[in-house]
Image (cartoon, rainbow, N blue to C red; front, side):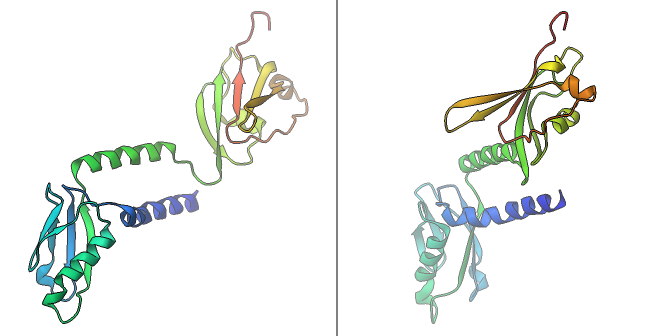
Length: 210
């Protein structure tokens, strides 16, 4: 669990760097510029509605549609006549425009909802379960272990007729396994069925005289 958490946090911290490499600058963004050879030029650059930024010693320079790395090179080239050689420029997106920020926040929330720790599979509990819906469980969990861990069955569950429905994405069909959980509770040997990603476990409602 600790290793999974560390891997997730590392991914979060590395994501902005990978994201910035493919991001196209847009009007309303605020860029953070640092010039190693002349710190007095360090400043925030607002991308204007016409897609340009105003640079000291240079004037207007097109920014919209360019990647951060391309824009960094353009700024260095534009400032070069004022230095003995092309200056070293560091550039990052300090703040996104409101529309892009809203889209990214929505995407981040969706990603968080769909995040599944490494080493787990998603299965679905339907019917007379105390806990229904999608459940992320450890890879290698058996059906019997799942029934013991899931929060239990309701008193209306037909424990003789538990079903495991396993979809086959390639053929568009599913295989149905019948599981007599009541017999297992009574001491019968339990067949070892390892759960897979996408399995659906159904606990039907008990009939009147069942």
